[in-house]
Each structure stands twice: as structure tokens, then as C-alpha cells.
Image (cartoon, rainbow, N blue to C red):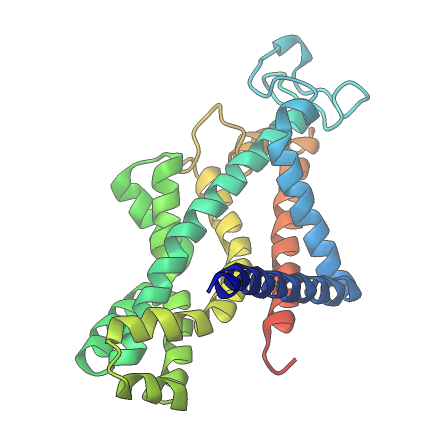
Length: 300
């Protein structure tokens, strides 16, 4: 008995070590496949740089992004102000650096809200079908029938301008594609042999959905969420440009373009720098999403 009791923890530790080794091997294989695709690797590098810049913004920024110095207003890019200054003398490079935090804040909150909601609605609708499917999909169709930015404008107009209200508005307009995708995956999975076997064993619908169907839908949903991040960035920038997103003096990229458009003919850097940042980050998330789609495709 003593021998068996001492061997059980050893076997458990060996199993855990084997699982960890397999996970590391899978991650290493995935990283190699991503690196082999130069476009995906470039997107990953830009996203990692965005994360690093947001994390270490106080050390990367050369000036206080909110400090006004009217004597230095509208200065061209120079060694002191790498991307020039705005109409209040604020350093544009520093504002871009701190603006990355706002961009990641919006992306993270919207993704955390949209992913579970879309996944839950899609899997429940696809699994039960019938009246539940009809109700959920008609609601989804109503949201999809309106352009995302227009619907977000309507929600922000009802909630009022502000960064948190912009996050809620973007989340309310971003879940329908996730729900559609999860429903399509569930329709294919609900008649699979292993699902039927679990049903015959007496498993509840809740257990089947969240233990067996949701994990199978996660890869497709993750890819879709990654590719949706570009749209989230553009929608947030659009709301900021219209004055309905982050409010002054927060250094949000869309709001920076909005305030700089009055001077853009003589001072091009006011809109060029934040516009380039929006374009580069959006493109990076699209490229990364394409790479993840190829990586997580079971056929590959």
C-alpha cells in the first residue's frame, strides 16, 4: 500500500509533465508556422510592439502628452519633437504613445464583452434550433442590417459621449458576426457521433454546449475576434473623430485627427502621424488574423 501511494503522485506528475511538453511543442510548432509567413510575422511584430509601447509608455514618451506649451505650437518634426507638435504645443509622438493605451483598452474590453456573448448566443441557437434559433437569429439579423459605425453612433447618441459609452456601443454592434459563426459551427457539431454519445449517456444540454461544443468553436471565434480588432480600431477612431468617443484632452488617435484637420494643409504631421498609426495597427491585426486562420484550420 505504501508503494502504491507513493507511485500515484509520481504518475500524476509524469502525466502533467507530458501534457506540458505537448503544449510547448504545439506552441513552438505554431510559432514556426507563423514565422514562415512573412506577412503574418510582420503583423505579429507590430502587435507586440503596440503592447510594449502601451506597457512602457511613461518611459518611451519624450514629453508629457497633456502638457500645453503654446510657444511651441505647430512645430514641424525635429530632433526635440520627433513627430512635431499640435496647436497647443503638445508633443505628438508622446500623445501617440499614450494613445496606444486607449486603443488597447478599447480592443480588450470590446473583445472580452463580444466573445462570450456571441459564442453563447450562437451555440445555444444552433444547438436547440426551433423557436430559440428563430428569435436569436432575427435579433442578430436586425443588428447586422445596419452598418456598424451608424449603429454605434446611434447607441453613443443615446448613451452620451465618452470612452466607456463608446466601448459599450462598439460591443453592441460587434457580437452578431461572432454569433453567426458560432451557430454555423454548432449546426455541424450537434449531430456528430461524440455529441450523440454524450446525449445517450444522459448529459444535460448545458454540459454538452459548454463542455463539448464551445471548445470546438473557440478556434474559429478567436480568428474572427482577431480580424474584428481592425474594425474595432476604425470604429473607435471614427467615434473619436466625431467627438463621441474619448474626450479631450485624452490622446485618442481619432480625436487627434479631428483636431488636426483644421491645420492639415500647412501642418500635415497633425493628421499623418495618428492616421499612419491607425492604418498600421489595423493592417497588423488583419495580417495576424489571416495567419491564425491558417494555423488553426484543422485541414492544415
